[in-house]
Amino acid sequence: MGRLLNWMARNRSRLVAVALWVVAIGAWNVWSSQRNLTPLAAVQALIEVLRGTFWGPAIYIVIYAVRPLLFFPATFLTIAGGYLFGPYWGLFYTIVAGNVSAAVAYLAGRLLGRGLIQDLGPLAPYADRMRARSFETVLILRLLFAPYDLIGYLAGFLTVSFRGFLVGTALGSLPGSLAVVSFGAAIQGDFTGELPRLDPANLILGAVMLIVSLLLSRWVRAREARATAARLRAESTVTAGPALTPDA
Image (cartoon, rainbow, N blue to C red; front, side, top):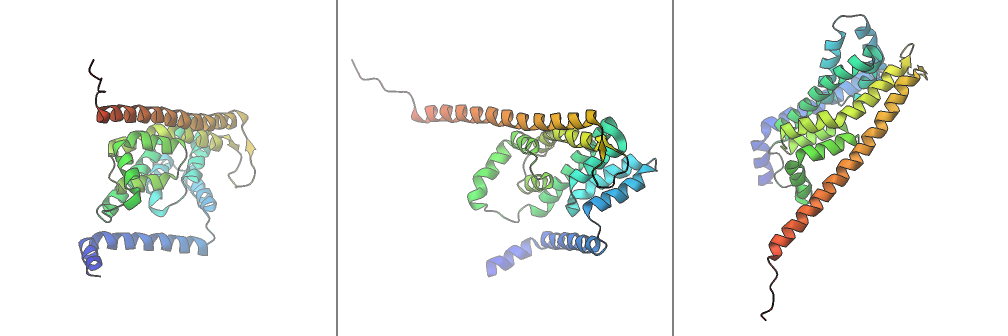
């Protein structure tokens, strides 16, 4: 009991910040549920606001950037970006916003989680691998469409290289972002949530980029597996030492 109290005393400020964060998330969920404000309805309302203002792109990027703090789904906003700004500018704004939002999640995980847990137990080897190969690990996870915000929080919590995390995010998210933005740009007419009329060219582009992302993830994983196997063979050879030959 004394050890727990000492741990709480050492991390009091972080625990208070985490508690306030949880309260804010709970308040948002209660407020939105009372008003039947689903993520789709929230994006529809946002589209109406952004459609008629010069500051639409800037507001879109800011909302996308702070979105991880409330765990608001990124997919809806990415589709909205393609719908509002088209495949080219929509992709540009989404890439900027997505990388800023990833940095926000990383920094939140790092500031609030650092030092809270010293011993990761059986998860320690995976954490060490992510720290040692941050770029490759994050790249593969992004290409596999792993939970976007969870990766950011986890990377920050484990204090992996920020540069490796950000570069892996930027490159790994590109095919998926292009796919989802293209799906949004393919929507013709009003953004109602019902089955819309779709532009075939953007729809095909989105499907192609989705396949490309999955194929790239398989290629990167296979390449990393071969590199790991080669490294393990080299280490085993060094450990075993030179072979002894019998005297003639």
